[in-house]
Length: 66
Image (cartoon, rainbow, N blue to C red; front, side, top):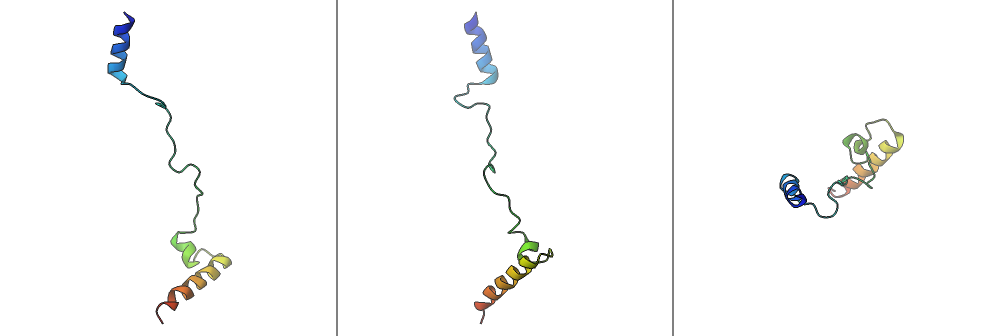
């Protein structure tokens, strides 16, 4: 009778090969950063170094338009 029970279990749950239950986080191992957010790019959040970097970015962008 175990054959019929196994067959019924397979019908209900399907067959899984390998890592059936594991789900991996797609962002695992990545560094979360705020560097690309608009306030940080424009220097609007109050940090002096961010304002300085924003100034350099603006100068670099304006070089192309001379």
